[in-house]
Image 1 (cartoon, one colour):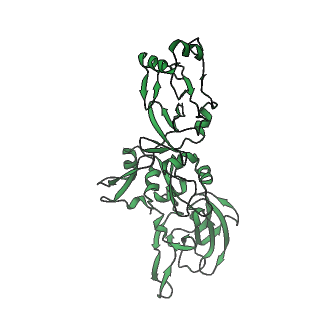
Image 2 (cartoon, rainbow, N blue to C red):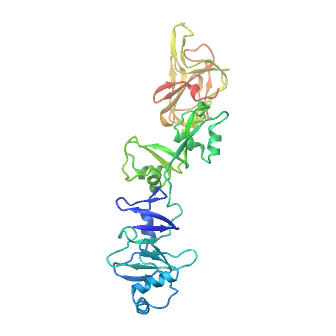
Image 3 (cartoon, rainbow, N blue to C red):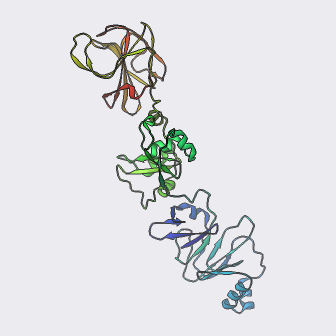
Length: 378
């Protein structure tokens, strides 16, 4: 089946109900069903709105001497022959909906063919008014080499893209590490990359990101809605979630207190024994009673005392992150309490295994300690 869409040809692939438009696949699915008019399988001319002609088909055939004369008349009045059918005020195999100019056309259904809006014989032709977003491009990209003084936000702006699109498309974990000479990919549309997880399906993904299923099919040139775990999909017009965006921009965690970093993350000499030991956090020294704030939104899961950490608090966050705040003079929150980033949760102290007033701050990612400096701007 061929369809003429706003003077541009769209060719249907019969097997999987997908279409190509300027070499880019589009999915029309229900759009055709909604827009087309069903015509029965008989040789007749059906009037689709009001006709400027007042005589019947029978009268016309008598006057013109049959179909050959009818075709000759079309050629004389300016009808254009294209691939075996005629276009004009009448058109064989031609279904038209009203146009913006008010022009009214007819559908002529040949013997042995039907047009049901989605199936029909391959020779059927139609003119169909589709929604403006029905024709979508497949995602494409080109390589860009980072120049001196380039920053990710300026690259995104220059290419009319959202910052989150560049971060997601290139799987950037830390935008601060971008340097001249690095090569990134610039996509031709906004959206995000998504890795398929166990139990995912297109409807679930589309609902989660507010994207139409047909848009996902179009952008990824998918011929089926079946997905494989680990497969990467581009979700057009979807936005990167704020948590992942802030993490990539090194803005995810708030520095929990003010003070001076006195001991970094990693191996160090124990301040009491002198033995080399692993230090799983960051020590920030300050006066007793200095406010301690939640580094990120989350839920308090532990408030207690430990021989090493003294008075301490543990908060659970999204995506497998936890933070620990140790050596507190006093905790100001309770287990199960929901806290927001920047909320005061305690006071700096020197309880437990400590040589002076400071905060022992830890970040755990999937239960493994990671260097807090990765997330803080100190």
